[in-house]
Length: 608
Ligand code: AGP
Image (cartoon, rainbow, N blue to C red; front, side, top):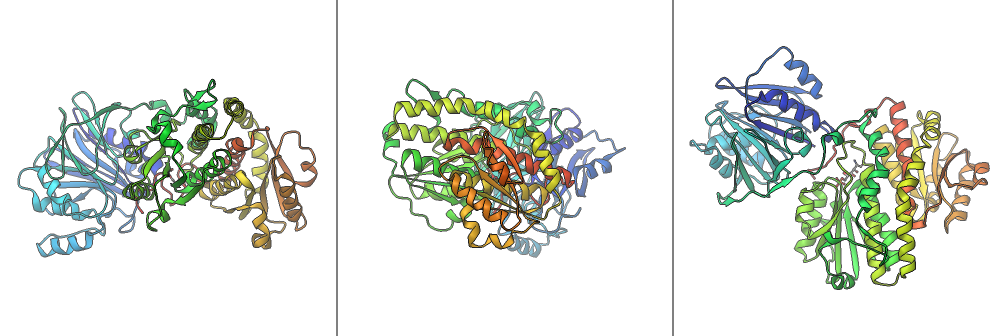
């Protein structure tokens, strides 16, 4: 969603800020702006629309400022126009603020501030922050920020610039991520490491309720109550090349093609062949504690929720522990039963999804041990979990999640192996799973080589308005994920269904204009799926089947077949999602859609 980048140093701030904004474009936004401390006054540039428009506005202008703040806004309060774009100012025009998050009590604060004579110019919740800071400012910006933010209810990550104290930028966070990047004679603040990776890899992740006073020379951190905090320095593992398209037309395509490598990364160092099990030290749980687990709840949103469903099939089948999968947005508000022996998992690529973070907090408050499966190291969910498993997929820039999904399934398979081996699974079976997992990256590679077949199918169907995706068993969540991929980037209405459920409603939709993607690999329900295909064909539906290599019979039934290698049942989704990602990608490209930044979507949903 919104993005913040701020710079204070010796170099010209404007290009650094603009570059930082571009690096965060993938997060989703609808307007952008910046403020610079230029020759004793604050200069603003703001626009509705894309950063390109802001860039055009800046053409021919030269700024010497060496300090500034910038923002991409995803509208919540007030339409996405130039006035509502950040930064926002106080009455004196001396204090500028950029903000991520939502101020829930902004209307009350606004009335109070207006009574005191503050004049508001925008419809945003953010503007109250600028006026509140002005209200408290008596020569100490850090203190004014602390006092202002203690009045605020909601979530925020902010960066504040003041004409009166031009040698500092003050940042504060509560519920929205903020990172301080440390350079030589310069420092940066950003909501996303991608905005600062070109300048430094040394960072401090601001904690909840912390305030950072950032100068050219260094940083000081305090709590909102003005207690000192010692900064914890960390190094970012990601490289700059990972933020580039590397010759691919889109980040999404690059990330689809990265999967053999990212799956390998998720497995690396975590398989113990001798013991036929997985090594997951990040869980921070003793074998004894894992043995006491009687029930597992997995909570997540979107694609991560689909991965959770696959985890449910794996864990229940192989480790025989009951699993419940909950949308985080539901879990957080329904007073879930979390008793002794319940282990809670949250899954999030970004580690910043507001609902998933709230679900984690709800479960912790109920006394559960909460583990996280995250991709972004140092993210809020990673930090607040009791332990967990990093997916190590590298930065995922395309809004449509691809490589994060296969990595999440991979680590869920590792976790399942660990649990199952502790319980009922034989050493031999454990070793078979390890062998199969070792082969998966190569099989994914082979699948990617069939891109041409998938592109040809996309050319036949890209102008359709509806798609149905059907799967059974562990392939049902894959059908859900295939449908989600298509709808989010191509804007085609698509539904995922358990294949047998089709008869209970969706079959009414089937005619010659309805493409139906059917996951029909040879597993224990293969014959049932074939019957479902017959039902579709009897109604003139167009079937695109995903079938096991060597299954020539299916070609007589389905209109199109995409072949997949034979993979053990529980690992099938890692391979069967690949053609569905590619199908969605090609269809979206053929429809001329903005694949990496689909309309209305944000990469990480940091508001409810
Ligand atoms: C995936 O393609 C989506 N963009 C979205 O559903 C996403 O998976 C969801 O918002 C959860 O994000 P997270 O994994 O970062 O928590």
